[in-house]
Image (cartoon, rainbow, N blue to C red; front, side, top):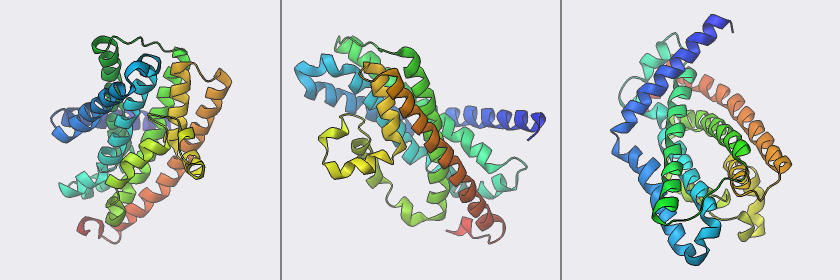
Length: 265
């Protein structure tokens, strides 16, 4: 890819990012998913912890923010292609000179980045309303973990978006996939509290490694070396997701351009 092509793709990602943010601002479902629901989870968790809330506040804040990230990825990024099909613009996007993968990447980046607002709101909620001490033990590693978490979630969105549009039966499990990932990824409590047989399942979930790195960096309970290992695994998952997504988008484009059946499903 030459420099001019790279600049053009970055410009398209930027346009898709800004346009998606503007559309999301007026969407009630998206506002509830990325703002209201994580705040409710944070409030309930802080209330249930009661006297122990002060010592676990940062864990709850980060965990509730991760629930917003996952819900946004599952329901909003997962439908990023389906929405285009529903409003009749999918075929136009496929016919454009710009790769549809680039456009969907920009849209997913907007969805996931916007979900970070829930983490910020939970932070202020815990510090102002509940007057709880909130400090990030390793801010540098925390920011790096947050950046790689966004990359991993966006990369995973590039997998589920074409899967959902090509296999409506898989999309039927969308609601059932939300809370199990909350639990198996250790968003709000350590997976050590779960039965032992669930641990291997957690290890194959990228959100688990994202949560492990973010919790470890925010609380200071993990060493820098341990956090870097978690981030290395997260990068590995992101790379695998991108490679898989290329094949999925190729199959989706075949159904659109050659079979002309994608819009009829």
